[in-house]
Image (tube, rainbow, N blue to C red):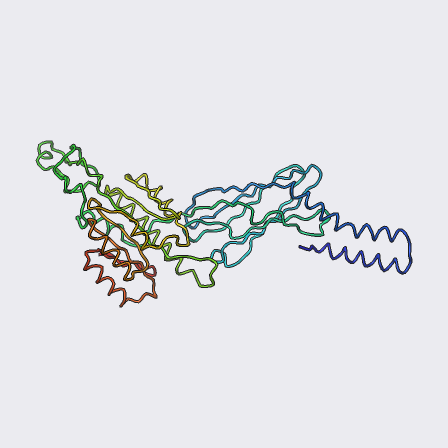
Length: 400
């Protein structure tokens, strides 16, 4: 990249050439030769300079909440003991993040010392987040050119943007009430209801169904029953997220908001299941199948991080994911979140429904959805014994 100083160099060459023609003198000839040699020497010197700069890239926080700044630290070291080097970084993020703007940062690194350039961008969407394109330049020794030191060979670590809890709806209360009312079967724990493991004092959150009335009357305290297979109450969570391709020309804002909504909804639901003493299994494909299991509420962060690792571009089709799953009659509940339903998916769900205790499907739609078609699909699903909930990304959802 040519610098403004290169223009002055051309003017100097032209001036020397003009004076040499007007008054020929050996000094003018020597001066012109020296001026001509400067760019050649500068380019050769640049190859040496590239070996005198090293860079180490680190992240301030590997996991951040959506809305926080993603921060990368570029730690440059000038190994030269003779020359200070002027460094410039040009960073480009996906257009949906900062609307095509380019971020630039500059620093002068003295001889045999280190300097850090910090690049940050505010995050708007959950998932793996990184810089789309990065280039590192340095001015040559005379300032004629800007030499590219590093580009695509830089390994920049991803920052994982975590989903948020869905606090804009009353879904948390609704789903808790559904589980408490026994709307969904309880798997093994219900079959082995008479196999009591022990008795204990009642704690906040215990169901009234667990109270041992005779023992409570005798002890003058609320006593509840615990069963040896209570932890067999399990929920498998599967998500069908829309595919995002950042290199396309289409408007991605609505589809990215839908993706956020599904991830937030899944995270909220998993919290509810765990608080109701269910084992939660989250299965994702990124690109291979990854399964994380949580039993206690303090393990929810593992599931939250797994949600954030799901890539933007779809790796395995959702129908293939469902066909890959192995279920049996001991399975309590399949919790599905999807943004689209078609005949192939309905056929897959019909096949699964015969093998499990219950299925709850959350159908996420936006304001452009065809409600007539959706109502017809819901009728087909409900006739299969599948519980369906409609969640609208553009409205405050009311659950009853």
